Amino acid sequence: MASGMPVNENCVTVFNELKLRHAFKWIIFKIDNDEIVVEKKGTSGAAEFSKELPANDCRYAVYDQGQRIHFILWSPDCAPVKPRMIYSSSKDALGKKLEGTVATTLEAHELSDLSALN
Image (tube, rainbow, N blue to C red; front, side):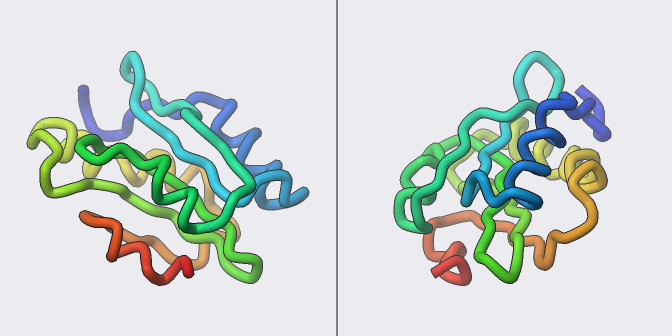
Protein backbone atom coordinates (compact mmCIF):
# COMPACT_ATOMS: atom_id res chain seq x y z
CA MET A 1 0.00 0.00 0.00
CA ALA A 2 1.39 3.33 -1.00
CA SER A 3 0.59 6.85 0.02
CA GLY A 4 -2.17 8.44 -1.99
CA MET A 5 -4.59 5.59 -1.29
CA PRO A 6 -7.58 5.71 -3.69
CA VAL A 7 -10.72 7.29 -2.23
CA ASN A 8 -14.05 5.59 -2.96
CA GLU A 9 -16.45 8.09 -4.56
CA ASN A 10 -19.07 7.33 -1.89
CA CYS A 11 -16.79 9.15 0.58
CA VAL A 12 -17.29 12.40 -1.33
CA THR A 13 -21.04 11.79 -1.74
CA VAL A 14 -21.58 11.19 1.98
CA PHE A 15 -19.33 14.14 2.90
CA ASN A 16 -21.38 16.43 0.66
CA GLU A 17 -24.55 15.24 2.44
CA LEU A 18 -22.94 16.26 5.74
CA LYS A 19 -21.60 19.56 4.39
CA LEU A 20 -24.56 20.75 2.32
CA ARG A 21 -27.62 19.14 3.90
CA HIS A 22 -26.31 18.51 7.44
CA ALA A 23 -27.69 14.97 7.10
CA PHE A 24 -25.03 13.70 9.53
CA LYS A 25 -22.95 15.14 12.33
CA TRP A 26 -19.99 12.86 11.72
CA ILE A 27 -18.51 10.30 9.32
CA ILE A 28 -15.85 7.69 10.04
CA PHE A 29 -13.72 6.41 7.15
CA LYS A 30 -11.43 3.38 7.05
CA ILE A 31 -8.99 1.77 4.66
CA ASP A 32 -10.51 -1.43 3.29
CA ASN A 33 -9.15 -3.49 0.39
CA ASP A 34 -6.62 -0.80 -0.53
CA GLU A 35 -9.11 2.08 -0.74
CA ILE A 36 -10.61 4.60 1.66
CA VAL A 37 -14.32 3.92 2.28
CA VAL A 38 -17.11 5.14 4.57
CA GLU A 39 -17.35 2.90 7.64
CA LYS A 40 -20.00 4.68 9.75
CA LYS A 41 -21.98 7.89 9.88
CA GLY A 42 -24.15 9.32 12.60
CA THR A 43 -26.14 12.19 14.01
CA SER A 44 -25.20 11.88 17.69
CA GLY A 45 -22.92 14.26 19.58
CA ALA A 46 -19.22 14.17 20.36
CA ALA A 47 -19.46 11.67 23.22
CA GLU A 48 -21.22 9.07 21.09
CA PHE A 49 -18.93 9.79 18.13
CA SER A 50 -15.88 9.12 20.33
CA LYS A 51 -17.30 5.73 21.33
CA GLU A 52 -17.47 4.73 17.65
CA LEU A 53 -13.71 5.10 17.15
CA PRO A 54 -11.82 1.81 17.59
CA ALA A 55 -9.59 1.67 20.66
CA ASN A 56 -6.62 0.11 18.87
CA ASP A 57 -6.94 0.85 15.15
CA CYS A 58 -6.65 3.96 12.99
CA ARG A 59 -9.44 5.82 11.19
CA TYR A 60 -10.20 9.10 9.45
CA ALA A 61 -13.26 11.10 10.43
CA VAL A 62 -15.04 14.36 9.85
CA TYR A 63 -17.08 16.02 12.56
CA ASP A 64 -19.52 18.86 11.87
CA GLN A 65 -19.56 21.30 14.76
CA GLY A 66 -22.03 23.64 13.09
CA GLN A 67 -19.81 26.53 12.06
CA ARG A 68 -16.76 24.29 11.56
CA ILE A 69 -16.06 20.90 10.05
CA HIS A 70 -13.07 19.09 11.55
CA PHE A 71 -11.01 16.50 9.67
CA ILE A 72 -9.58 13.96 12.12
CA LEU A 73 -6.79 11.42 11.84
CA TRP A 74 -7.50 8.94 14.64
CA SER A 75 -4.23 7.12 15.36
CA PRO A 76 -4.19 5.68 18.89
CA ASP A 77 -0.78 5.06 20.40
CA CYS A 78 -1.64 1.37 20.91
CA ALA A 79 -2.40 0.79 17.20
CA PRO A 80 0.12 -1.31 15.28
CA VAL A 81 2.90 0.67 13.58
CA LYS A 82 2.09 -0.36 9.98
CA PRO A 83 -1.53 0.92 9.98
CA ARG A 84 -0.40 4.12 11.71
CA MET A 85 2.12 4.74 8.94
CA ILE A 86 -0.37 3.91 6.16
CA TYR A 87 -3.10 6.15 7.59
CA SER A 88 -0.65 8.99 8.15
CA SER A 89 0.80 8.81 4.64
CA SER A 90 -2.63 8.52 2.97
CA LYS A 91 -4.36 11.29 4.91
CA ASP A 92 -3.85 13.89 2.17
CA ALA A 93 -5.60 11.71 -0.44
CA LEU A 94 -8.86 11.90 1.51
CA GLY A 95 -8.28 15.48 2.66
CA LYS A 96 -7.96 16.70 -0.93
CA LYS A 97 -11.22 14.99 -1.93
CA LEU A 98 -13.05 16.65 0.98
CA GLU A 99 -11.65 20.11 0.39
CA GLY A 100 -13.70 23.24 0.63
CA THR A 101 -15.04 23.73 4.13
CA VAL A 102 -12.82 21.74 6.49
CA ALA A 103 -11.84 24.26 9.15
CA THR A 104 -9.26 22.28 11.11
CA THR A 105 -7.30 19.07 10.94
CA LEU A 106 -6.84 17.21 14.20
CA GLU A 107 -4.47 14.33 14.83
CA ALA A 108 -5.81 12.41 17.81
CA HIS A 109 -3.94 9.68 19.69
CA GLU A 110 -6.34 9.40 22.63
CA LEU A 111 -9.90 10.49 23.37
CA SER A 112 -8.78 13.58 25.28
CA ASP A 113 -7.29 14.89 22.02
CA LEU A 114 -10.87 15.25 20.76
CA SER A 115 -11.85 17.76 23.46
CA ALA A 116 -12.11 20.51 20.81
CA LEU A 117 -15.29 18.80 19.58
CA ASN A 118 -17.18 19.40 22.83
